[in-house]
Amino acid sequence: MSSVLIRGGLVVDGTGREAFPADVLVEGDRIAAVLPRPNPGPLPKVPEIDATGSLVTPGFIDAHAHSDAYLLIEPDAPSKLSQGITTEINGQCGGSVAPRYGAARLSSDWASMTYPGGDGRPGPTWRSMAEYRALLEQVRPAINTVQFVGHNTLRSSVIGYDPVRATPETLRAMENLLARELDDGGWGLTTGLIYQPGKYSDAAEVTALARVAAARGGFYATHMRSEGDAIDEAIDEVLALVRATGIRAEISHLKTSGKRNWCKIDGVLAKIQHAVDAGELLGSDRYPYCAAGTDLDVVFPDWAGEGGVAAEIERLADPETRARIAAEIDAQDRDWSTVMIGGTWSPATRTCSGKRINELVSGWRASAPASPGTIICEILSADACRTGAFFFGMSEGNLQKILERPWVVPGSDASLRAPWGPLGKDHPHPRAYGTMPRFFRLLTGRVEGHARICSREEAVRRMTSVPAARFGIRDRGVVRPGAYADLAVWREENFRENVTYMSPHAFAAGMETVLVNGVVAYRDGAFMEKRSGNFLARN
Image (cartoon, rainbow, N blue to C red; front, side):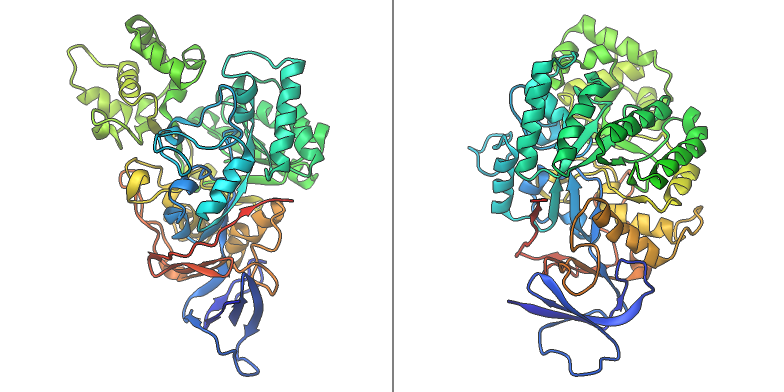
């Protein structure tokens, strides 16, 4: 059993307790001792990590991530590990990596990648949670992952992508499939009720599935049916589900989207606070930015998105249908200066990344006048409907109010990235590399225009032990004897993000050493060859 002593640091233990000077002894995958300084006796003679002048904290927990598939491609998890993340909670927004049966497809960016265990062609090489878990354990990622089961993935496996209600037979099939996936390691159920095909479900369907998860001790996280115009009704739907099932639930990436909805924030926070106080909600997560990031095709009218990406591509190939889609996009009440093109996948669209739709309209070279709709259709057609986009629909003032709530924890809402290889070719949201340092800096008053919210100790608690306790992740998120040795050594004054919306591939500064399950995974900007992350399961 290997041992290491982290010596000379200031320990912020994740509980909210005031920082204290101590040395941390790690034996195997656990913390063996926390030795306050000055030490009363001789220290063990083991290899040392010099933490002089640095904080020693639990590794951070990304409460809302999308790295499921990419952990198989880039198991070093560079964008996450370099900001101190040692555990991710994946399978969010209803779109998990498994199960994948029937018509179910991975998201277009995942589906375009080549995975281990196959014949070298793009696409997944697993179907069930058990198969995915076995493959992940073979590649052994550098960080831990908690894997939820997505409602959209379940529904498409049983019903497909058609805009229909579940029948008693198809609902029973979804319930049985969910039960199996949970028994094979799934942590609970997530929904993405603005996405296909989850948007076609009614509350009764989601409640029935949540009841299956609750019976197995699982959790529920939801990208609600609305985060804007109908946000109050969406919260009411979540609360009704919790009351009917008793499941422990979290609202994902809390926001009030669209300028006309910014005024709703106080009422929304009061409603959630009442539910938290009553024990009905666990809380929420939030990324520390004011632009959402998702697929550009979310601007399609509902009918144009039916059937998923394959059907969208067919519709764009038909000139008459494409013109109708463009016209309906143009008729939307949307400020196109708030929509920026993110990741693109074709040489013809590469120069669009980082530009806003209104900029593209004014500079588009075309034989006929361009409009937002025609440009969006052209980009999506060239990219086979895989284009990403950033939607600047949130308020900095509201972000401050949200982060002031002690039940809000950091969730990147991002999959891992790397500045190299297949994951370095797109244009991700800066939250992929910058969530943890920016969250910490916002809470501790280090971002211009934002007031200090709490102490560094409380900020670290919300980045570690709060999400661990919320989701029942045992023996993580704290620095204490017996806990797993997921640890981060970092310089508080240097900890900051180095990414922007225009330049999104850059590692965070200030993170010196990261241990995962007692093994050094990252040190001084280098990713270690020995990876020690685990697939975490409730059973």
